[in-house]
Length: 293
Ligand code: SAM
Image 1 (tube, protein in one colour):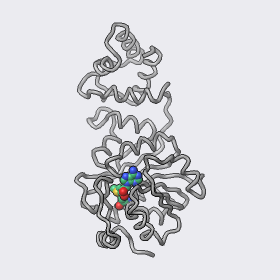
Image 2 (tube, rainbow, N blue to C red):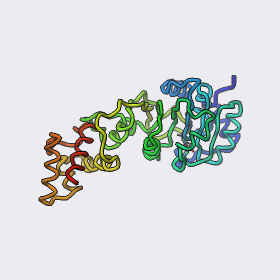
Image 3 (spheres, rainbow, N blue to C red):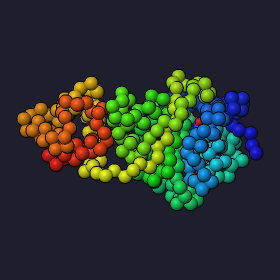
Image 4 (cartoon, protein in one colour):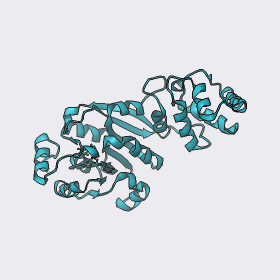
């Protein structure tokens, strides 16, 4: 057994040894709480048969715990300075591959087939994400349509609550819909800012995404559906009608088309988008599409 990386003392010692000062611009906050790390691995129910992708291994605190539980771990780290550190801290583990790449430039679908020795093993994504690009990373990952058995990600608490939000709540919006269209989401637990070196100036939470029930009705055009999410919430306080006419236009013919679509799917133009379920958004999108909007 090897000593854990994730204690405040060892983390500080590793940073000193390699002369690493954390970069705020890269969202570098290293976890130094072993309990939290173990809870993250548990939230993903990581098994010895699983392939795990990690984004942003830092100095390897989470990577190490993942390697102990999983079959193989492939970790993407953008900061070249940390590659040497990781080679040292993770040397005892033979089932980890660290790749020095910006995750936003990785073709994950291809990577899975080339980086893992058995690409048919169950796939999970587990990461303490750099907060400045949480949403772009998640959107890119979800858009691949890859069959993740679980995605367990740490992010800013407010963003976590938006991902998992249900209709009718103030956190519910286009981000909730975009995520829940692909997977079901729940907040597993919150993480205090004192669990990191350095302490971030926000609180964090762990979100678990799991395969969702297949949708009964599919959208005619995914890209346009995602546009409609944004249009609906363009001005949160305004009615759906207001946001629709602002986006699509106020001419007589357009108003007729919009009203026809809304009537067909029995949605009151005067409600706010925050009341609409994902299924209602899909129905509305399909009706608008039939009207040629
Ligand atoms: N996993 C470590 C932990 O929990 O202690 C570090 C997490 S830290 C919040 C985020 C990590 O993501 C940093 O190591 C940072 O260098 C890395 N990172 C930032 N932007 C990245 C990108 N575009 N691609 C890959 N890694 C990135």
